Image (cartoon, rainbow over all chains, first blue to last red):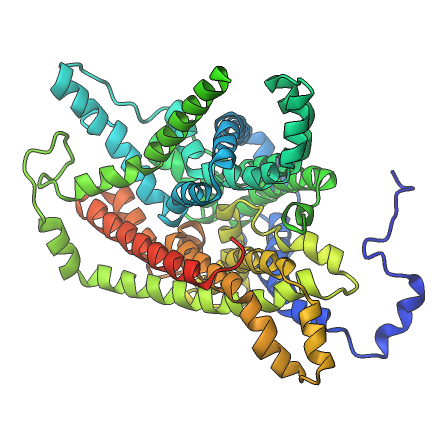
Length: 300
Length: 263
């Protein structure tokens, strides 16, 4: 792998001497966003890493570095909440792949105008705070909720509460993150040329062959980006477990929050965050090696 | 092609089902907000608008509303400003380092928001920044400005840069080109970006929760009540928030349709 050192910018080496000329317009335009990235993302993450090596319960990032927080994490069964978070993220990503693919196909086959309307309808719930929507599901699924109450009133069926269990949490995560899977998938499917589809069908390809040999490879970048987005964001799932699970399981995001708040142990919260950041980082790195985001959004 | 017709019907049915499911919680919230009883029981026995009256009378909620609105408007304005230039750097100008810039830009979006919120809290604490709604604006920008940049960049990809060159050739100044060509051509993208930013900021919970200190936004107020004890004001405030967001989205999309352009 070390042989593979293509310069990222692709700029010829002879242009090193540009330091004397004023930087091009692109640099000036990018500067505010770069500053935001450094001060709002890399800085805070660096601080988290720094704190994770501080002694237990310290409130300053300056001190003798130690590994005791990581040792504590291993010793104190935090692998359970890590396991739950990873499992929830993987499971809901897998479910969303299956749920969203036919959905994306249906939207793509609709006429352009209807396609946009449907997309807006599915994406619009993103603009409602997730705790409102989760509360809505609780009131729907709970014992005397809309579902149970209707069944009781109509058929006299007694329905037990459908919340406060793991499947409810998985459902909540899938519901909340569905648009994040659907949208990149739509972009991916839109890059499958209509001619390629027609040609395959004319040559006698079955629906399955069409899917396997034409659609899937061409739409793969979109599908991969959607999966990555869902996986990484749901790794931080927090409200879902709180409202729909009511404590049946604890996710890693909840552990981190309580370390920072009730626990008043910033270094421990930081060390836990570092582990989440590592998992997310590996996932992003692996996916980004396969696909470049700009190819998905750029000129077609 | 009979099987194709059947599969088409099935797909359409599936699509409608998903759309219905997406809106179930909003409908339930609406129902719960007009039920008189202290705890929600379905079917509703007595309807009452009392909880809306309480909501409008509450000073706490007025404060939260004001905080939420201020944050989302300021976030949207600043995001659009940052993103406009960010998008030009992304899509229009070639420069060294652009490829890294393109890859790094969206990383804050591909990140668990609760962890980002806590990291920002730690960061502000260490730098001695007092956390108020201004800190929340910054936190929202970290997440929203990259999204707006992408929205405007898509628009920037879609237009022909030779128009700008022609204007330069005809003797237009840099400012004239910007004012008469670049800005109007990117207009629809800028507007979409603004709309997205307002709505994403309006509905955000994780980043606000960890960075706003003593200030409370509407989603935070709701969260506090949901944890600390349910009151029917929760669905009332929630439903009003849904309505406000819905009106903003509809008006925005109508304006956007008049502007034309890609997507």
